[in-house]
Image (cartoon, rainbow, N blue to C red):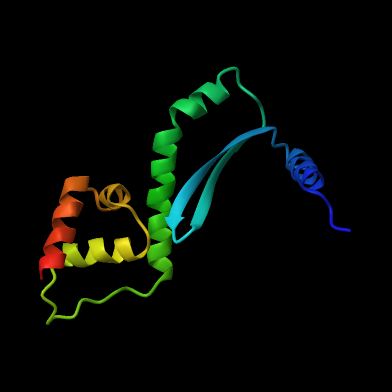
Length: 129
């Protein structure tokens, strides 16, 4: 008979304790196409305001994780070379590539360092080409 979920959780926390990990926070990072990554920060001691600080920093931690994940994902994939005869601009191609990987316009804007409206503009422009 397979071990239950409770046994797995108990084993997880037991192994963490063996490494001196008492506290932590895990930030989910949506990766598109029903995939996700996790960014975890751990600590060996519990400060009085650890949970509060983690909650306040959640958005920036998630953004950091998304940015890191995007760079790792890009580094592991072969670069997409632009066909010189393509009527699309480099930015239009980038926006389309991130869209094909399941990123939202807001996520693409954060990855590329532009406003969501700019991403919308490039995607609209690509559609008209």
